[in-house]
Amino acid sequence: MDNGIARSEDGPEERGAAGSRPTETNLTLKPLVPGMRWLLFIAAVLVFLAGFQLFVFTGQTATHFAWTIVNPLAAAFLGGAYWAAVAIEALAGRQALWANARIAVPAVLIFTVLTLVTTLLHLGKFHLGAKFAAGTQFVTWAWIAIYALVPLLMLIVLIRQARVHGTDPPRSARLPRWLYVLLGVQAAVLVGFGIALFIAPGQTAPLWPWKLTTLVAQATAAWLIALGVAAGQALIERDARRLLPASVGYLLLAILELIALGRYPHQFRWGSAAGVIYLMFLGTILLAGVAGLSRGLRPSFGPAVGNQRPSLPSQTP
Image (cartoon, rainbow, N blue to C red; front, side, top):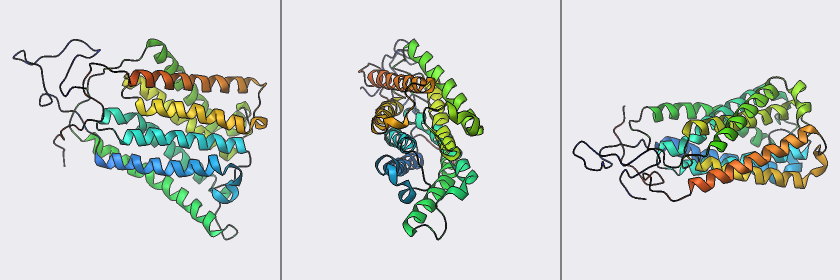
């Protein structure tokens, strides 16, 4: 990519008052602040560890996780979601520009807040107290501390990020119309069903294709709502290059959840309407991930918006 402002899909080349092509001195791009970058990297490490506990030690949550998940498919689903989030957060943290990392932040913030609420609502089911091994108690206290601190830190850093001067680069990789429709449906269904599952797990959990306890239902709902928020954010961004972290995460999510089904097929209600809808959901996640990734990686003559380091703008104190 070149270093100036070149032709993009939004229109012809822009020129300055004297007819010359504008350079980076005419347009200051908003960078990703170091605090947000490191918070995303740290979050990526934490979700990798949680995913390892759930996706690898699926049947050992009584000793290796913060609470016991009896249904292994439920544990594997959560573990796959955590591992997919590794890609989203780590790739977002590698971006130079705020516009290219922004897709990860609202979803992470919403997820951590909802998971904290779930934890506080069901604290009595967590592995706390002398009857649990010291290592298990440590994992549980670490879980509580992480979900208490991360939302607060993200809000603080987000305020700092908002105070940085600069602008977003022009959009250079528009999404196809059918993908807008697909993302809109995903956002509406995931947020709507996720809220219902979170607020009324007893009434909504039977609509899920495998058995869920109240605690696991609300933990699952946190993921569904976060995915819906990410889909809604994608509609706002309207640029495949800004969605690359989420596209990779989507692709991984679909693959990992299919692996989970392959590991525990007997826990899945294959002949039910819920089972069919779930498989269709995974298909749309896979399709959106592949489409977003292929367009986001496609060479273009758009502005240099990748991992190139912009010159830092002045920041308010």
